[in-house]
Amino acid sequence: MNLLQAFHFNHSDKIAFVGAGGKTTALFQLAREFNDVVLITTTTHLGTWQTDYADKHWIVSDKSEIKLLTNKIHQGIHLITGPVVENDRVSGLSLELMDSIRTLAEELKCPLLIEADGARQKPIKVPAAHEPVIPDWVSNVVVVAGLQVYMKPLTSDWVHRPELFAGLSDIKIGELIKIREIKAILSHENGGLKGIPLSAQRYLLINQANNDLLQAVGGHLASDLLQIYSRVGISSLGKMGEVYASYHPVAGVILAAGASLRYKTPKQLLPWHGGTFISQVVNTALISGLDPVEVIIGAYQDEVVEALGHLPVKVIINSNWQSGQSSSVKAGLGGLSESSGGAIFIMADQPQISVSLIRSLVECAYTSGNPAITPLIDGKRSTPVYFSRETFHDLQRIDGDKGGRVLFSKYHPEYVKWVDNLMALDVDNSVDYTKLLENE
Image (cartoon, rainbow, N blue to C red; front, top):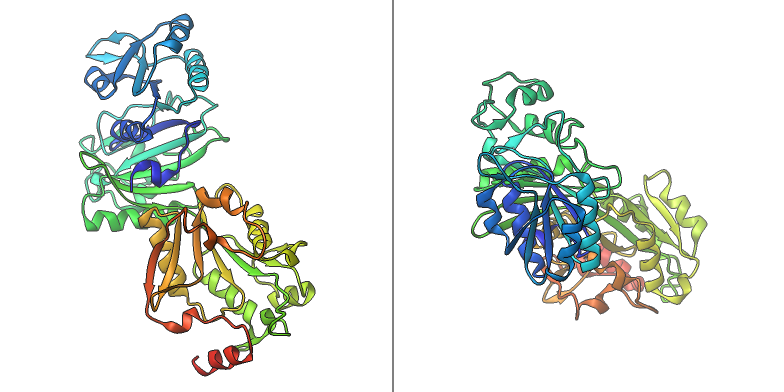
């Protein structure tokens, strides 16, 4: 997958890049992936050689010069900076001029990318007091860090401002930098999080994951830092520009609103291993790490709530449950926050669904970038099903007794092949229930 797929940016976004370890490379690679008009600017210095990454370089010194660009900018990447200064560098722009460039981007209906600090081409850095300079109106901030620093000594050869790194991570100059220290810097308010506006979404790009070991290190960091960043990408950018994974919070939406008319008794409440169907499904979702876990209820509300006990879930009442499954899907989506990058929809009549199956769907979501993922059991599509945030607007438009599978013609699903046929069984009648019990 590429950066645009990994982070799901759109053409109205204003995105600032900070950090080290491939920040400028990532910024220009993302610009190319938009395949449209893109504006790039900077609040810091850029090397004059880096201006060649753009299709056109504009030097401005006041608002009037920026306004004149409206009719001059067409397809491609347009870099807007201040004039050339000493040491073969171009100067950054003031926040006042940044406002004018933001207006220009809105007039052109194109994305705006901003390089907001420097790093002297080191893998990782800690910002000084005067940086980063991020306009308060940016919608997204991408923090970049390079894994070349892993198990390297804390010196200026590997770290921009090693003395500040030592102060935030509690290791001494010359000691080896391990996962704990990288995590400490990236999660510190004076480290990776410094200067990010409260209204901006935070993203982390862990770059330079050039081998299996470093990709594993990146995955470990991503799992820990998802509580802080909306998405965490693992990449090895360069000529190929590969993004290996995009970690993001995945919610669990358990559809438990039906009246079980064919079964003639509430399937959600059928006995299962000392509990009920619904309590088992919820526990599986929680153990799998889905967060948050929502339970959509409609019929038998009081009984289902009682069966849930004190499980840490969000109960959502679907007052329109009789109109069909689509109403429960919509209710579940309505309860999710902007931080949820995707959701796995689980049926309440499948208590046998395993943690390993759900985790396989999540891992596939991280590494494939596909917007829809479903198990393939004995050659047939099954449940539960993962949908990414980019599908949510289409899921909201489904009507009647239909689920998300009606979108598979638009969002061609990725398949997770599974060999346990029991996972495909849903309980429509007493024969199914008996079969389920006999095979457990």
